[in-house]
Amino acid sequence: MNILLTGATGFIGSSVLPRLLAEGHTVTALVRDDEKAAAVRSAGATALVGDAADAALVERAARESDGVIHLASSKDVDAVLVPAVLAGLAGSGAPFVHTGGIWTYGSGDDLTEESPVAPPALTAWRGTGEALVLGADGVRGTVVVPSIVYGHGKGLPNLIVEAPRTEGAAPALRLIGDGSQHWATVHVDDLAALYVLALEHGAAGSVYIGASGHNPTVRELGEVAAEAAGLAGGVVAESAEETAARIGEGLTEALRLDQQAGGAKARIDLGWEPNGPALTEELLVGSYAPARV
Image (cartoon, rainbow, N blue to C red; front, side, top):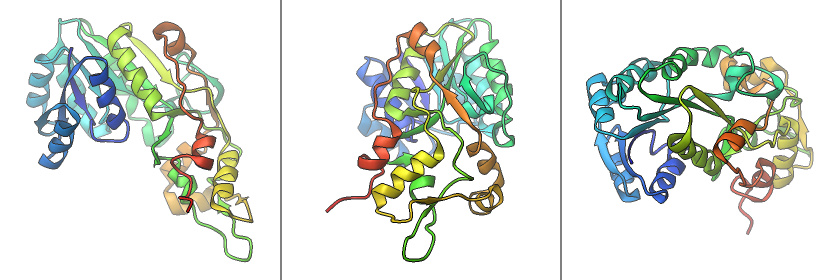
């Protein structure tokens, strides 16, 4: 299939693009500028330079495609892009894989696609676009819900790795809050495989949580990162107010959610098999670990 892909040069897109090509699809990547166009061409895709919030451009590109994966999701973009894609694909039965987010479900020790929604303020906007995709007639709309995405030294785990250190003879790594909260996690390459499976086999109106089943606490992650960095003081908790002062109130609220998920539906319905290294391993000896001489 020829797939229209947004966000192809981003963190997740940089894994989804090669996965699509490896599975035999061709890709038209909607990118913002010539530099990004060169990057996707070198990766094997066709570049379409333009604005994801240009409704006419998006509708035309969607109509000319066999399906769409939308990774460059944001409040302003989705308000234009989602209706435009649905208009372009109308009546075709073609797949449209949209991006959600695990924070939508709030805190929970066994989050599934059926869990009640309780999003933090930072992501409360997501519901409108998701409802349009899941309720669309004549389009095979699905939503992939990434948990905390990690891998290749990128993403939110760097908020732990690069957190401030305390002063003194035994410096310690500052946590996000008290560190008792769990994070549902997924390696970016495993998540890319899920996007392609949802494109190829996802049922219309379905949501698929991308979670590996590895749900460490932030304290556990911080302790591993501190060990990797050789910090004799280990970790130290912060108040929510202290964390908010350095990373913002909205992100603090989201990252203090206590979330655990296993991604069972994607495994059962789509045959998804996440097998990337755990985030703790990545922090200790993998892509986030300090370079060893």
